[in-house]
Length: 414
Image 1 (cartoon, rainbow, N blue to C red):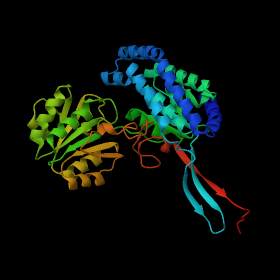
Image 2: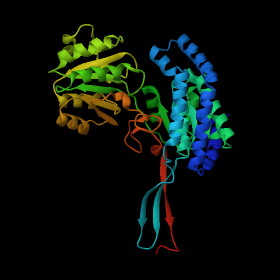
Image 3: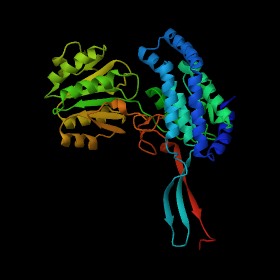
Image 4: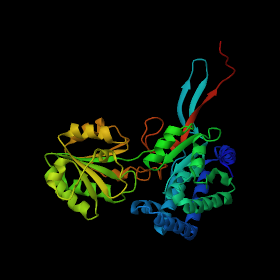
């Protein structure tokens, strides 16, 4: 089936879904969650094929981790879908009401976007997250994953469509583009007739291509060159724990820390202690000249290291003169995703929070919390690093737009 036929079917299905009440949408989601767990063996078998091909094609350990599914991760996918079912329906909310002197009543009401396209890479859990969020927000979705996860994505979408069909709703509210060629991605970028929004989720190359080439409206989701700044007033125990978690708990994801900034007054003690913990995971460090004076085994950093999203057990390190120096470095090299300061000085913390331009700014907490589930959204379809329409984790409200409903009693304009 070509993309335009898929788009036509999705558009038809979306119009029915837009009129479906919250209880019915929740029943569909619960059916999906149930079937994901019931079909876990089938999904893991498909995932095994992807992992075997990934290893044969030389995928890194970090990318294989993104790709891998097991019973626990599939249970997590199902839980994410169930969590979305418990969230308030974002559609049909009265956002504002205006009563005009001529008697007109104007209501601004939230409504679904319609048909959403999602282009993503080797993260098969995105398949269920994106579908469930779009469905709860009243939208049909067309998914296009990367070739690395095609077997997994196909099994997951077949399972979800089967569950939708059982409820009596058209399974075309969830569709998968199985052609993983560049041509299929290009076709989605220009499918304005049927796609109301396109969301790319993946590496910098994919996101840049979609933003630059799409004629369909796009929400830019972020590459995550996330920084942690350890201030002169930092609690060292907190710094060690937070940096270790933010870098090593899952280095392949976009909210993992990629760059460490250390105030010059505490750099020597902090760096040796932090490096000792990072060494247990074999983290490769790329440092400026100053940081390399304080610890052995740090590679010389090149200019490209300051802007790099490693997505692996690597990290850049720089010693800075001041808070202002740290903020300036973040603004030059950051991607607007998630930034963190570790400090016990409340004034310094507030200055950092107010000055740093990013979707999520932390004080004394790991950047790994920038996540729809952790923010109470149930799941997320991506992390937006742009400023219009959506910023940060894209949850249910961001998958709606609004219309104006105007109630009159025969008024005409003179």
